[in-house]
Image 1 (cartoon, rainbow, N blue to C red):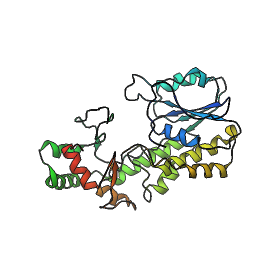
Image 2: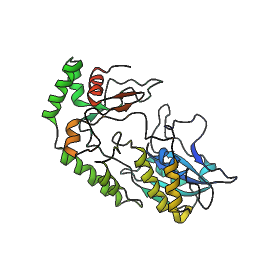
Image 3: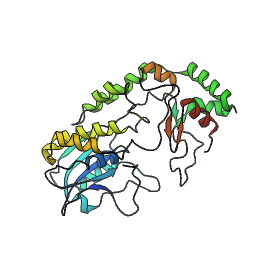
Image 4: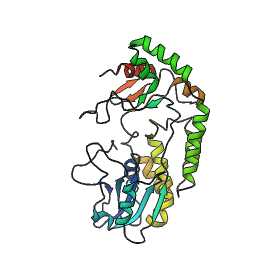
Length: 301
């Protein structure tokens, strides 16, 4: 299950192997196509369903969120709607297309920002065909300050670690803010997720960025969504678990894992973090210190 990319000719659609499949529309952010594809792997539903991704955001190269074709909304059996703190116009437009009485199940998004306390936009990034989100899509305000000083190499890394230690915010406050937000999401949805994040983010590498997550994270969300959707779609918990476990071509969301600052790793007790650990960055594998040196210099590869 490789990272889904926009199709030039049609919607993002998975499953629906029968002659007249009905549609489950899965609406939300960049986590949602991965969820839809995972759900489409479940093969014991009462009817044959296709899972269609409806984006709440504009994709690279497009002017607006792509609408779901009427042919799909006409046959909608269920809308799986990711909770939004601020409802997007795409959500209102989608609901207006659905058949009267189409059931809706709401689920939350994964979100944890405290692992990257200095994240910010990077003005140096220029998208291109190979890197539509730029080579370094996630900025770091301390690294940018070091870069402006003209430092490079090991000297830059040392200066970065020193300055970031002096400017590090209260990480426990940041974490509690994140967890409280996810706990609040759970009060607005049909599928809770807070307990999974709180219990597992320290012992598993769930979050690759503040919103891109690992395979186990997507699989757990899919399991919970299917549990809530079973009265509409059918299927069994045992078969859902077996099908999700058998998905073997999906390693996680996207092509890069944002390295976590060593002070954040220590403050949060991340059991999976180590100084010599390498992180996927497109087709590269870097330690945290190799990454921050390259990022400060905005080095190509």
